[in-house]
Image: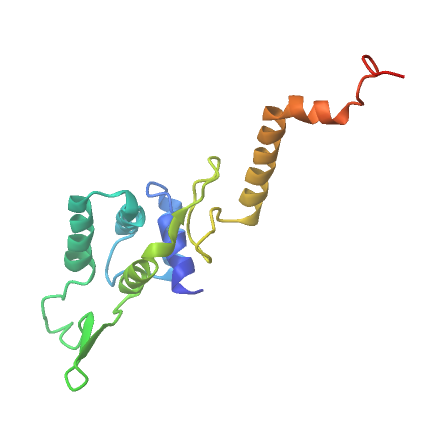
Length: 180
């Protein structure tokens, strides 16, 4: 399973459903080493908050940036156990570049959130509302079933709104008033 699918799965988790959180960790592994399952629900809430970044105010965007810097990509204090753990950022001095490197699943999902930020969307079907990453910029629904349901609803609404005109066109013209 690729990081996009895992990210969508995390964001759609019910943060209060302990069984779903345990199942996520059992299937995907822990987000960070030595972290309890309770944190998975908190991470899901934070990722959902960041998912809707387009509707956020400037101070909320700064909060997302701070959260990523301090909570996700923060370098751990060196101890004897983690002395050889790598930082979240790799530098190539000769090339004059730096590149983020994922240390764990949480880092991978945060990097995918940042990479996919312009394609993050919530299904526009009012009965659904699932979070998903668009495959194409014009995608509005997370699944073909949601698309079909909304298309049929739109067609029904249009037909109801235009019923009088449709019926007028279907009827034969009356013979009254016509000269023979």
